[in-house]
Image 1: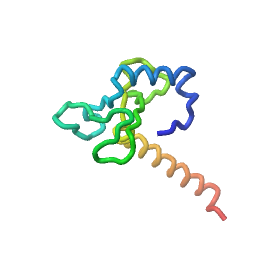
Image 2: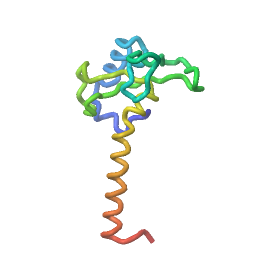
Image 3: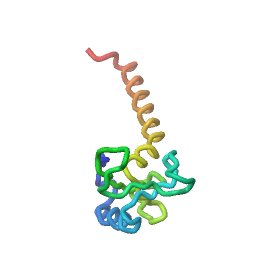
Image 4: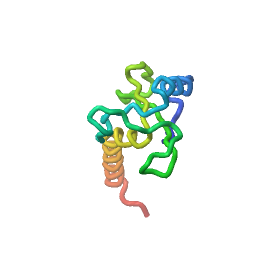
Length: 117
């Protein structure tokens, strides 16, 4: 999942995210926060960095999620190592909200300036 603007994460984000992945044993830490149960209730997602999931075709890429959605808050208790799938599912409500806000803003601009030629 590419970052839109890496500078908002601070100058040492690469080192911090690497250290978090090391701490997590290069395995997704999701225990259902994404909305899926991973085996028995409370079990961790089985995704390991670089391994292909049984139901997928691409190697797993781990990311680091900011629980409070503040990208410069790198406190350890605010960071969660997630595979791309879990990270995307967890962020989906926020992305949908931003998309709605963007569409509303575009409609307001259109009403002010008229439609495109």
